[in-house]
Image (tube, rainbow, N blue to C red; front, side, top):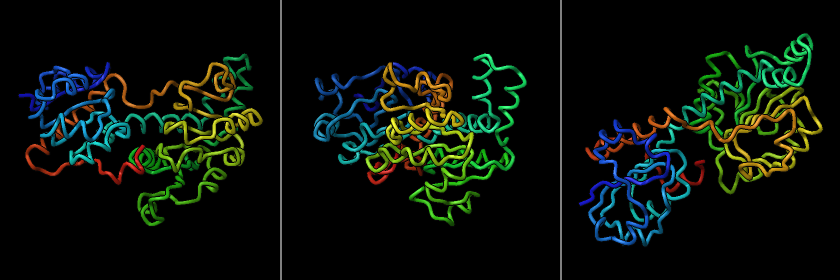
Length: 329
């Protein structure tokens, strides 16, 4: 009887460590989608499925036919968009460690914001390209510093909330553009609700946390980037598809005072001839803001704890609903 099964890709051992496997009562043996579809009789009594990055997608009819006793999926990673809907439609509960994955993204973003307001990125690059010490220091003083600086957060979900909490502790002023939170809710959080246009025009740093859903594709275009303050910085740890990339490149080419810190692009990675790879005011990282190395174990720990609560009939914290898929990253 396979009451619990484990699925996932190459990063599975980082997430489902020996400690996390013990906490969830898992043996560590990994099951593939092919196993389930080929030998469905082996999995008719499976009640719980544990996974992480590399979780395969199933059709609803496959779930009902091959996993008829399945009660819940515990996904030890962030976005569930690629697989969750058929499980939910089949009446299977889905839980995501998105809150755990939000922590390193927020840490990474907040660190970039604080460094950007000191002029760190352009100053470092200018020194590497031969600028003299005095000129590099003068360049850094074109930036505001952090006390009282204005930061714009686009999309205030789990990650946006965590970033705001960190920034407010350091006495920065936070603007937010979010379609789902009211002015009163953001005021209680300590932030000011504004339009996206006002946010770009007023912010020293703009940080994008929009979900990758049809309504947000191409939402951030050239007019917004062109409206940014002198020496402003755009950070994207959200999704590349939310940005009209060609228009961003055009603005960055015309305005070398601006800086873009891009952990995500569309496509990802950029095409070999993309100006993003050569523009001096663009700083690319290969989608590293989410959980890496030791941080991955946090996601497994969250899902092991969630499983124990669910199995005991206690309150859970990280359930995903069908409605949430419309706004989740």
